[in-house]
Image (tube, rainbow, N blue to C red; front, side, top):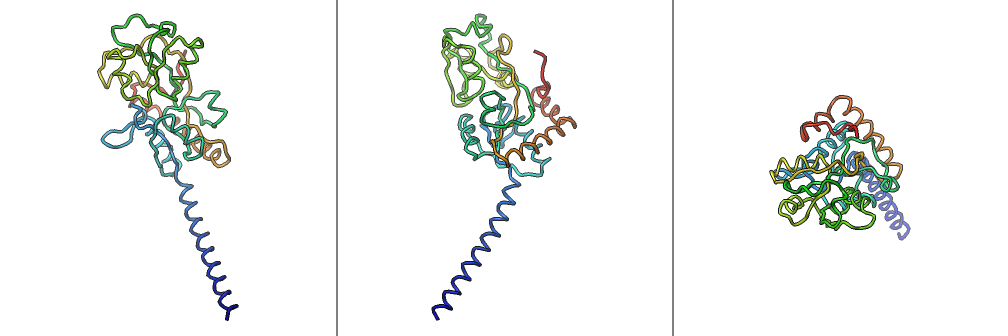
Length: 264
């Protein structure tokens, strides 16, 4: 009797294991069809919320990529520094929020082909005629988003630490702080600043040439599965560039094509 009971328990356990395995297989199949993407949701005009909906240039590019790959998107919104941490721990597949390609980042991530190009630009109050280059920022208070490559680009041009860099968690409030004189300048992508100044109508202007010019691409963790996914995204980007989608999206948000490399 005890032997029969033991056999029945063993059979039940085996059945549970089989069902569990089948369930996991379906879950993995579904998971493989989902692209987990990070964004700040506060980076106008790249990844921001409008009427409660996430939109922007980078969001639309990634949406077009996912459509080409027949994949669903699962967006996660965090501050930029938090996004990079989530990507490094594998909680995200990639980030679609103007991530610049740098030698430092390439040590940790594999990047797709560039889908846009950006220049780190200085913006000042409209009546400010004293600041025209990085050299003029010495002794000044300059805003930059914490963890952004623009902050790092500014730091790289200030080896003697003569610039007082004030870091912000998000872009929120940075332009107003420049316009109201709380800081002397702010650094961000040239295309971002042009769009934001036009949208806000604040008395601001770009000054000087971009201090650094760089490629923008999608970063992926360095492992076999993400490397395969990155190659698929590259193929989708090639198709979107060839059929004119990248150019069309760029002109929609910037009135110019930032998806091609500009002459320095």
